Image (tube, rainbow, N blue to C red):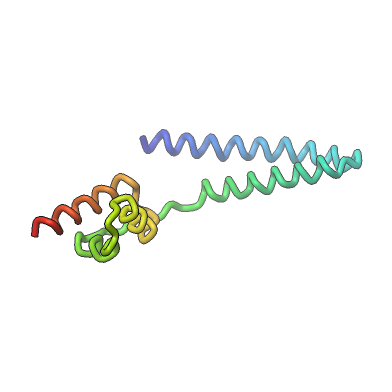
Length: 114
């Protein structure tokens, strides 16, 4: 699965770079012809693709090592499990949805048993 994510990310970056090069070449032609609306649209497309590439290449944060007491502390007072998972993921940007759900369920089951 990790290989597929990396492949998808690589293809996204390569596609964005190819699109930016093509639009840049067209934009030069549009500017020479005085087609300023098309030129502006080309610049917007390039700017959006630069943001996309920056987002794809940004390092992904690593999840923190959570203890059950820390999970309970963060999700304390939240009755809805979905909202508890959301709050835990906001506290740890590197935490996957599956891991956050597992931690919240484990913390709640241990909290009701003891």
